Length: 305
Image 1: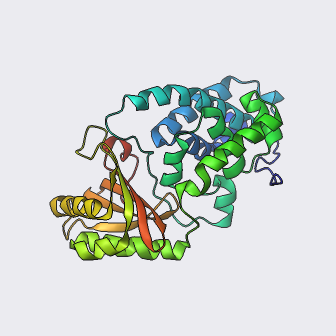
Image 2 (image 1 turned 135 degrees about the vertical axis):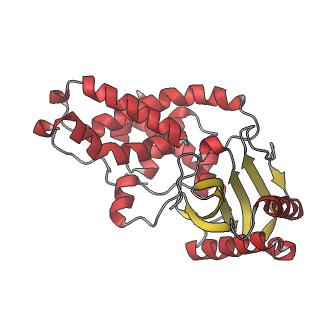
């Protein structure tokens, strides 16, 4: 497959605008890169802070392309962090899921700047990759950075970087889906799901769940949640019915929301406080997997509109 045009465009150095303006001009893009590499909004913010400190102390007069330079800094910081993150997640209470983000419909310009949306399901699958595979995949497949630019970031040859991305692509193809899904179909199924779940309609839920549906939940040991995936339509429907009976009411219903670029659902535990975010994969008109985030430490970055 031919390399797409690199997203890292050539720009003049910071000049009289100074380091703050130069960094701020790239901050949104750099945050998008860091989030996709780490699966954590909190960790991505920490990386940006570290990158800013390095940018301040760098010899910026020698930097012809601030975006390319800062992309290298951020990627290397994330690369180093991914190794230690894996050890922390092995000791995590229950199943570790990536932090969700609530997104709006991006304009073509936004998509060019921030890369293609990466679903919660794909981020979860990407946890199986090595740090080098993940970096090569994210930079090339999500942000369309060429392998000639990725290679020095990873201290590899362009061909080695290409192989890393190819291997990663095979493992995360379609985010673990069984096949491509029309966004309108995904929206229809998830919207019907939220209505059935809020209404406690077990029969309707069963119609919307794949017989082999998987339920993944992350409570982080703080909030009660299943610690291992639950499989099967009947078990998932009963689990969901129990959950919604206990916490969902007319004043705090389960609402459709755009989660990581796809229709998902959220529940406000109180005004301004997000208590739960759900993301889904859909195939054949049914939900095949649900990713349920209830860990308050991973929801603190979300604010109610």
